[in-house]
Length: 173
Image (cartoon, rainbow, N blue to C red):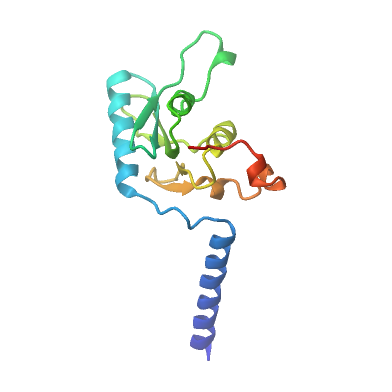
């Protein structure tokens, strides 16, 4: 009897997850590990070249046109003028009118420390939202592993759900 109940419970959990996935539109884009690994490699190689000593950070954005756009944080004497590491690549995607599919931000504390993925901050999430909930974003993990999730997973209660989708600014080809 316990085995039957466990099986039934497992099936119910799977169905609930599938329904949630459909309701939240989390299923419409499949992860592409090849793109994700390539983005990580591009960011890591760039950081090692651009910042051979000390702190280093870079963001890589992948577009539907198969372009990899790289950006860094600006260095300035006035800390209030600093922008997020992803900002430059986001602006490049706008400049070339390309749809963003993936975003990764990678940093290290110094040349001897491990690389860390930074989940996009709230402002960058808002910037990436322009290209839709299905944008894949790299997220921080405790074991420093490479993990991407859809932007919608980071924003299950996003304010934009209060408005019709066609009334919001969004990417148009």
